[in-house]
Image (cartoon, rainbow, N blue to C red; front, side, top):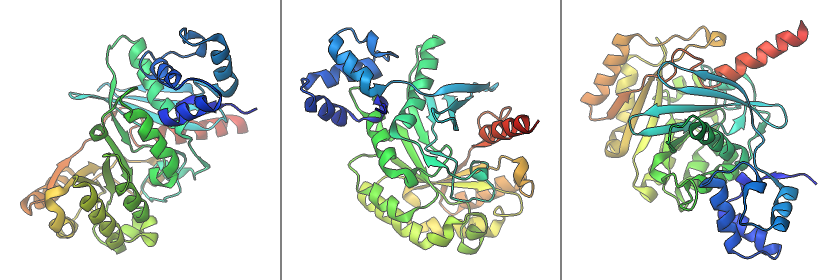
Length: 358
């Protein structure tokens, strides 16, 4: 019998599973406390559960499957983990320290099919979705790291911005969000969690209808269809107007601020005319829109793209501000390590391939 990740079950799903096997409802809360509050790493440590129940859990579930392959530590305190999944695939998870707490960036897919021409994540095509348990386990592994180094700190924020398109793995994403948001466990506030999408319009609408107040970020990167299609193939399926209509729907349902991610690439999307077009695009929703300007992280495989010059970044930012669009420049964490999303994974896979050939 194939075991499944116990981290992949929401508390309600775990309760239902136990009730179906004749266990009392309160056992689910006890088990939840062991997993997410006491954060034990084996069923044997769950001492207030009967031996028979621990054996039942051991028969059907595993707690941990990720193996740490590489840990890169930046001078600014950012840590990038490369984890090996049970099937041998590699994923990245990033821990970032901010004045407001510890934030973790998680991966939702093995590879990515969105096809952004500038992105390291898409260098290797998607081979599969991650399970909800594999996404939760990234958070738990990072939290165990904090526990072990004696930081006496907890993961307080999550950004779902790692490798893959989260809304292309929607069901597992939602189970993950409900697990980490659960007040009886990790209790990471919904307002401290942000999901980033490249613009899957139907899923933005579905997400708006969920009974959870998670933040939404949209990777826009261009203010018109011609330019956006040239750097993001997803725009052929969901052009800007369709994405913006879905964002309007999200705002109408949630009344929450939307973040628009905009990577600045030298002489591609960083001209004054693009800044003005972007300001015009967001004008009607300017009170609930925030633009995150991100200087591009160069990637060897995409050598045609360069980081925008400082003067261009400052001018772009000023043009948005002058037109009433809230915005800021986000410089990357971990600049002295493999900062670009997917970069470490890609390097490790190429290194292994070279060793295998050698």
